[in-house]
Length: 270
Image 1: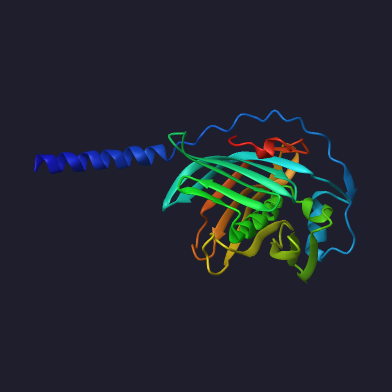
Image 2 (image 1 turned 90 degrees about the horizontal axis):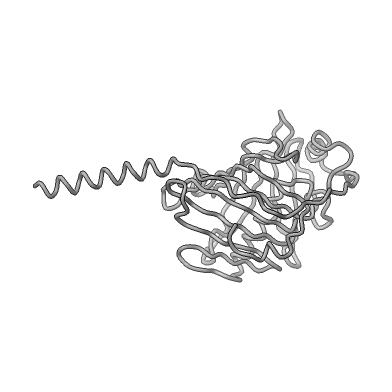
């Protein structure tokens, strides 16, 4: 009987310790040492759907900056196997072409799980604690959607890249078409009628390499603001519709635009 009591005490103690550890935020990553260059600007295109034109004119005016690359760093919460972990992340983009994601899920602020994933030259690779998946067609499809959806953090991409195009739906909704190989994918972009900012970006995406069907994938801008002088969605949640609640919430704390990331995007780690 005493042994059982001690086992229960140990289990309860471990649960309490774990609960405390999951509430410790990790420190942010050290700043990257990639010098940024000043962005060129270009006139806002004519003929954009009404909510799209309204957003860009409110935020940027008649001229919008051209973003060639972006390095985004910050902290997050991520739900893994039903447990919500604090995390920190660094996402590197060659805008509209390639990305690299590095994420650390933490306990007591220390790395517990590391994720290295990338989408380079149309090939996706995910290095997860449970294994590595590379160049699977359904993973590539999802990675391409992530590449463009994350443009919400540097949104002039959607009006300066000639491969992206908009179609009108109504006064608060538009379709955003983006390239995928020789074809196109599209997002439904819903704008907040009060602020004019994009609020929800929706697409049909494969969840995994063995998914039989696509699932509605939701990217929600919870807050808009500026980071290092750049207008951006400062907090964003990512949800699979069949889960019913966000699996991750990302808070951007540092943005470096238009740095040379040609080598950095092929590295691993922060």
